[in-house]
Image (tube, rainbow, N blue to C red; front, side, top):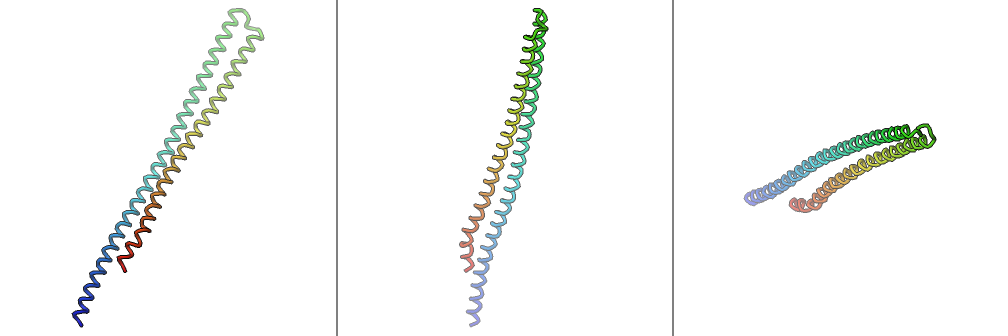
Length: 166
């Protein structure tokens, strides 16, 4: 009887050792999956941060371009006003209402151009911000989809791993 008990204990220890080995492999795989997910989350955050920085830089570029265009428009308007005033002076009509109306028209046109430029600059900045936000949301959706895939994979394999312990 002692021999059969010893054989039974030896077989039980072998099965238990195999179960512990399978459990250890599952634990190692789980640890690797968690570490990979943590690293993936970290990299996704870095990517999102880089996207925000790129969007902010793009907005600064657009603001600088708009400022440059406004200055060019103002310089052009000043030059046109001076040319019109010089031509009016040369022809002797400098003090007429026609010249005053023409100079006022140049100022009005400048104001309209500056208003349009400011509006387009604002819309360009808004567009840049929204596209960066959309890219960030897309990255986050992809990341969490991967995490969900890991969870579903572990859930599907839980039955297989649990079968080793029966």
